Length: 444
Image (cartoon, rainbow, N blue to C red):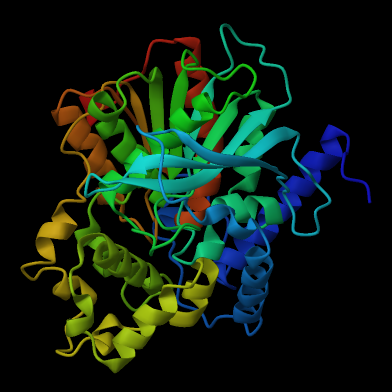
């Protein structure tokens, strides 16, 4: 079977794979009619809830079965861990494919790593991730840059870990990661706490995800890969959950990882305020509300089970093993009030004492990063409301940050991701060249 292809064919196939993955993620949602950027038609475009396709859950189950065979016991931490964050616990070579048939193997040295990080309770724990070093020569000035690439929502199940899905050719962010590798960068991709490793993934835990992202960068520097050392310049990149993790890492870096030479961070559709999840209720992405509630419960022991009825407890149990596509398929169109004993929505539940404090602690934007940042937000994003992403940029500006803000006009959350990708590359390259950073704070 031929795995190496000349570049044009490789990129065409990559585009095909991307289209197929996006189609799978949107679960049969209608294609939006073309509109010129900025027109009323595009700004008013929205996606109506659609019935999921019959084969979606079957496909997700098959993918999880394949993921079970990836990594084996690698994800079980040893009895004792090395001192300090970002230390390598173990590593093993892996393959990175763009497609599930494994026709397109990405031209990079790929290593699965387990490393030390710090959770929100201040405890040293083991987490896993992937270090990717492009086989392309770095043609810029200085050493090869290292990008901390924070992945978007993967789900809660261990089989959803990016270090597994990258090897299976089932990672929807694979094409964007590959584009960065084609430019000669090295990447550190965290799995986050509890994805692959024991315990439930602490989804949307600001400190845990931020620390895991920074420590993945440290782990890449400590791995001993040729040309990757502590002196390498670092950029941070992420969209959606990854945008939140990038924002958290950017805010925490000055105190938690001051030795890292971070030159800039690009954060797309950042979930800066979890209190704004109410808009997901009853829609395609209501499963994300379950992800958030389960993740916060795992991190802060909220006792949420006491406030859920039998249907709600069953949903929480089910979502703990689900990846993104499966959760969308399982819960799309469900109203969260059907899961609580009182008939409250999950958003209303989060306003209660005991919940509210934990949720508000995940708020982003309370501290401006020490380096320039790029915030992108979709005008018609159907997951993260426009005012949330723009609000984060405004908060950073108010606190003295240097912020470039860009409004994404492609409809939907997925559409915004596709539009954001080339802007991420442009901003990252400019920061690594040392160009004068652009600042939008004057107009925000």
